[in-house]
Image (cartoon, rainbow, N blue to C red):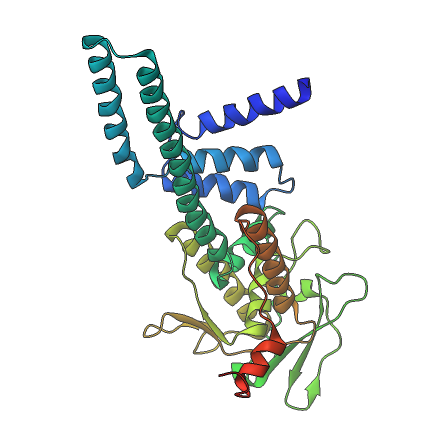
Length: 323
């Protein structure tokens, strides 16, 4: 019995928090959700706090109905004081107004939650964009330490960038840190450690840096745009120029840079051929897809399970057997 009463009190407390408390702006909600999503421990307590704050911070047109309930309450009090009505009539009026109050409160809570669901769905789906994934991977790598400079070898300085092919080969000891091999025409180099091209942290050669993350992205896409906040865009562009500098150190400078930005399309294009045989970036995208699917199901649950289509019945109708 005590457990039931405690749970009932907690539910009432949560319901009250939907209407009373500080209201957050969209940016503040986005930042709190981002911190929760990128944290190693995604606590249920913090998630519930974000939901409560998010629902409370939404505006609903149903707020307009409150003034009519207040007017009805004032009229009922004025009339009941002025006229000596039967107590039964006063009780009926009281419960009528109370019923309207409860229904409006419930509808208001549902409408605010639906608005918040739309907002949080947009936040979750926006994380699947290429720029969002690239930024998060680069920022994670930046926390590990400083990047390493490539060896100043001036390797194959007489060749064009398009003649150079960098293969990313599976590493049985470390999936995150592929080995490298350089192909120029019919000539193949020996298997190289990523440190040769400055693709690891200066403090630990077993950890990839942000330059390697970008190189893997070029292994999946020949060119891509950076579409994110200005501060994030500057950080990504700084990492891109760092990769350009390391490629110039190892292969030698040429009249044109190995990675350039197309002024017309706004895309960054890499002239060096990156052959990622580990399919690293695709794995990043698969992991992000599964994460988004889980978060969506957890944050925006369906109230009712959608009816599954009867394939046999649909096939029967398609054949024209049912008029």
